[in-house]
Image (tube, rainbow over all chains, first blue to last red; front, top):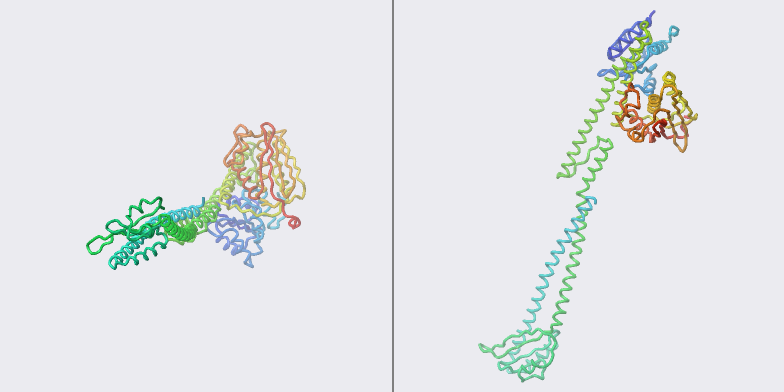
Length: 129
Length: 462
C-alpha cells in the first residue's frame, strides 16, 4: 500500500512541486495550505509522514502544528519534517528536533536529497536513488 | 563647561554682584550718616558751652564757666574752647593764660594743631553778649570716623559674605534641581541610542523641561512603534522574498537532476544559469535582510564552543567541486582542536563569504587558495589567502564598507552581489569581539585575517 504523506505549505508553488515529486515516487499525497487544516487532515487521514512549512502567516506556524501533533497520543508517532525558506540555520533545525520533529529541510533543496530524506523518515530502504 | 556649573557660576556671580552693590550703597549712606552725627554731636557740645556762658553771664559767676571749660579741656577730641564777649575780649578759655586778652592775641599765637572750630553766638534776650566756640581736633575726628567706618565696613563685609555663601549654596541647589531632569533626559537619550526604545523618563516638572521630557517620551514611543514596524517588515520581506526564490531554485534543481525526464545539453546549461542566477539573488536577499537585522540588532548570536578545523573542512567540502571545476586548488592548514567561542552558523557564513570571494577573484587554473588557522593568546586566528589580482591600497579601506564593490575590471562581469558581504562579515566578527583585516598588493594576491576568542578551557570537553 502506498505511503501517505501530508504536505502543508502556504506557498502553492512549493506545494505543487513537493506533491509532484512525491507522487512520482508513488506516494499518496494529501495537501493543506494552512496549519489548521493540516491538524484536521492529520486526524482524519492518518498520514505516514507530515511535511510542514515553518511560516504560514497568518495561521499557526509549522512549529505550532508540530506541537499539536506531538501532544496528541494518536498522532505523536507520525514523523514530522519541518521545512523553511526563511529560518535556514542549523540552530533552527536543532530547535525543531528538540520539539520532536524528525528533521528539518532548508529551502531551496535538491530533489534527490529531498526524496531520500523523506524515505528515510518513513523508514523505507532507498535503493532506487 | 557643564550646564550645572555654568548655572551655579552665573548665579554666584549675580549674588556677589548684588551683595557688592547693596554693601557699597549701605556703606556710603552710613558713612555720610556717621559724619553728620559727628557734626551734630559737636554742635550740641557747642550749644552746651554757649548755654553755660549765658548762665555764668546772668549769674556773673565766671567760676562756673571756668570749671566747665576745665571739664571741656579734658573731653577727648577737644583742642580748645573759649568764650569772647561782644568786645572780642576773652572771658573764658581752656588756656587760662589768655583770659581778658583780645581774642586776636590767642589767634595769632604760633602754630596750632589742625582743628575744626564750631562756634555759637551767646544771646541774652535780644542782645548779643558774646561768642562761644570749641575747637575739635581734626585728628581725633578722623580717628573717630575711621573707627566707625571700619566697624561699619566689617559688619557689611561679614553679612555680605554670609549672604554670598548662602546665595552660592542656593545657586548650587537650584542648578542641580534644574539640571537633574536634563541629565535624566541625556541618560534616556543614551539608552535610546543603544536601542533601548522601551525607556521612558519620569516627568517631574511642568515647565519647559517637563515639556521636553513629555516630547522625549513621545519620541521614544514613536521609535518603539517604528522598531516594531521595521521588525515586522524585515520578517515579512525575508519570508516573502525568499520563498518564491526558493521555489524557483528548487524547481530548477529538480529539472536539472532530470527527475522529470531527460534534458539535452543546452537545456541543462540554461537551467544551470537560471539556478545560479536565482541562487545569487537568494544570497543577495539574505545579505540585505541580515544586514538590516544586524543594524536593528535583531540578528541573535548563540555563542558556544566551535571546532575551527571542522568548520573550515565543512566549508571546503562545499566549495570543493566549484574550485576543482575552475582549476583552483584549495589548501587547508588548520590546527586540530582549536575551539573558538562563536555562533557556528554566522562564523561559517564568514568563512563561506571569504572563500567565495577568493574563488571569485582567483584566476582560473593555477589559482591557489590557502586557509590557515592557529591559536594564540586567547584568540583563534584564520587566514584566507589567494593569488588573485590583489587590491589597490585605496580600495582596501572601502572593502568593508556597505554597498562597496571594487572596480569592475578586477572581477568577472557575472559575479553579482550586493557589496554587503564583507560589511556583514565585519559586523559578525565584531559581534564576536574579534578583528578582521586585509593585506593585499596589486598583482600579489590578497590575504584576509580574522580573530575570534577561544572558548574557555572548561567548555572544551563539554
